[in-house]
Length: 169
Image 1 (cartoon, rainbow, N blue to C red):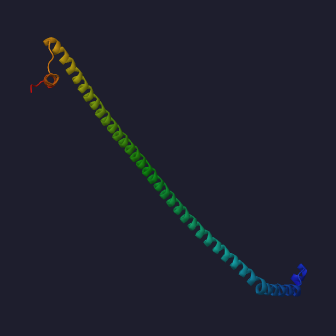
Image 2: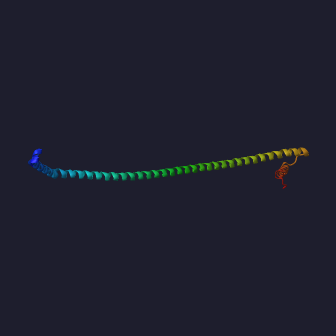
Image 3: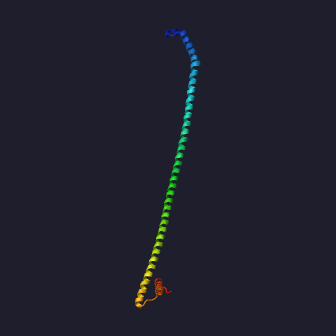
């Protein structure tokens, strides 16, 4: 002990300081250390909960991304189907318009042919009548006498019919 005193250590002070340090450690353990561990445990628990929530949010975000991608694909397919339907309807409408125009053209063409045939028949009838009259006059001058107009008309029509058809009746 004398060696300690020479070094400047007082054993009674050293023991008192060790006892004070032990008491201080005991008090810190009882009052501070348990609260400090409790705070650290709570913080660790909050960090774990935050990590779990972050993972859950990450999974939800991933699910939402997949759902959005699925909906976008579905919308694209629906859009394409609508475009195809619209194109089909447009083609059907064009074809229907073409068919209607063709029918109208055929009706007009048939009407025009009918009118032309009617006008042709009327013109031929008029020419026959006029030709018959002229023929009767010419025949009358050739024979130098007038014949019965009705008899000449029948004879001329018979000759004209033979001439047009190429057959004798």
